[in-house]
Length: 421
Image 1 (cartoon, rainbow, N blue to C red):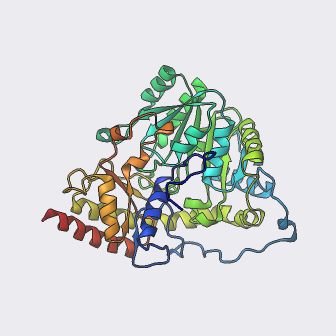
Image 2 (cartoon, rainbow, N blue to C red):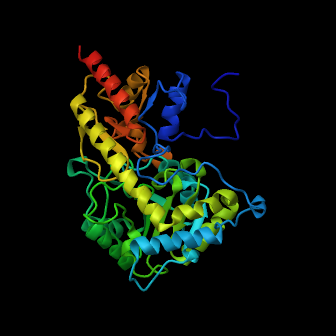
Image 3 (cartoon, one colour):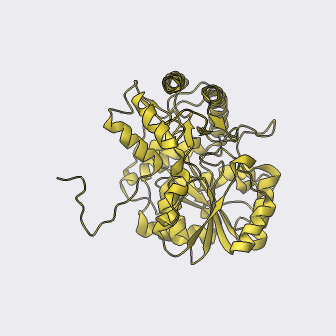
């Protein structure tokens, strides 16, 4: 059958950046189990045992009752455990506390975000450029709201001040703002007093903050003596009135991406709405996995896992940064969070000075990266892709092991040398 054959009733659905690059690599023989490949494009952390981390779960017991559907909003016990963790990490001493009614559990991060998008009304929704590639189709498929792009400047380290936030909300009539914090791909983190001001402005102007916090335990510049985590939950005054909606899960911060267990935390009214959306979108997550996840939410487990992540991934971050800079890759901002380096390749020889050119050449060395243009979130392709500001950028992941990263840097060094001749 011809590759260009299509059935008229179905549109061509684009693939996200990570899916695209791994698909192209698979054509050349890539497999996640093939040690000869270096996947610096991956959006997941290494999942094996880490020094100092709690033992990895290798077996899940299935209770007789677990053969049934889980509630669409998730098991009550898991929702309680999530609320308790947020209160212990971020809300000690505060009068307003999260409860199970402030939590909805989903079968994956995209499911959580899709539920929220489906529950939005006819509003202007702001989003930043660059940001998470999967936002693009999410912001296009639901027609109730209008996505409004906000371009951030690499020369300023992708900074966006509280005063600028206020001007954008008032000037563009935003009722909601979607953002990843820490930001995928730049690694920029809004935290501390600055994040507190963002939450206060959101409260004052009634603009919902939809904050993707999936990398919130990968913080590289947290205050001394504090667990290296951050969440807008720390600055919420009233958990049922402040328009702050948070997304997180086991995927990154607990290093269990295959469990597809995530959650939304926010006001009860919002949680009711996203659970209702889940009833027709996805029907809810896996009951056995949700039950098995409950012990992972114990505070002692989270502290041990987070500290281990910080030690191991901090070393990988520093190594990847140094290696890329030696190759001539420029970094607008040293990442404050996530496990990515957002690199500008414009100073490299052609064709490596273009993100897609770099990606294609690196495949020949069995190294996978993600071209920057995928993070130019462009719902409905309303802007020309030729005008993408990020065509000369590449996202490099230090999610893989140190050994994989070291091999990738050697191969990329050979690649740059090859085109320097």
